[in-house]
Length: 181
Image (tube, rainbow, N blue to C red; front, side, top):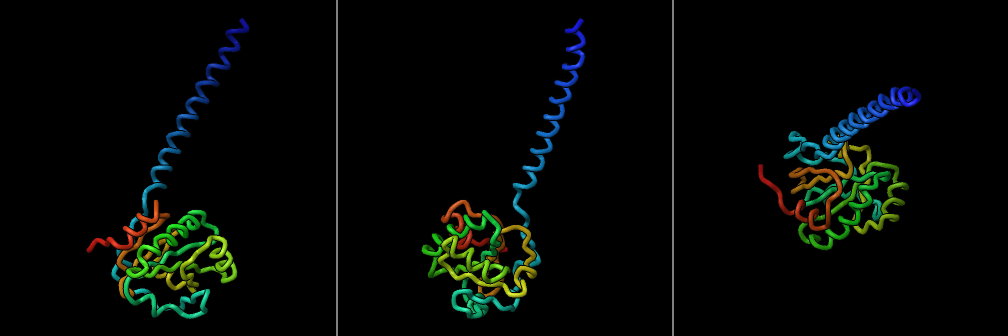
């Protein structure tokens, strides 16, 4: 008799837990698939000129805007609280050595200058770090994911992509290979 009462309670409980686990797993799979997809490039931004603004080099205190519109330039928008951004700093430092004569690489942040300087020093950034004063570049492109990379040719946005590069080689490849549209 006890066995019947016990199984009448346990069996539905076990089935209920199994169904809940299955449903949770399916929801997690759907969410993971959506979040791993790369966000689309905003086509309205590609081909436009970089917004005129003040981009102060935090090491020299000079406005670097004129240097950003000459030749090929990679701007990598970073944020101080972003672990993926920290990984990208390492890729940028290594890639810079390979492409220094072909592409100028800059990190750019729109946060408090003291926090940005501390972040750059803690993560051994050996490339120029710019402050996007007033967030003009951030607002022009409308970044939603960090790190965000903007490749410029003579001040015109020719490529935009997000996330940390798999390696230095992947970053270099993205900088040098641009599909024509």
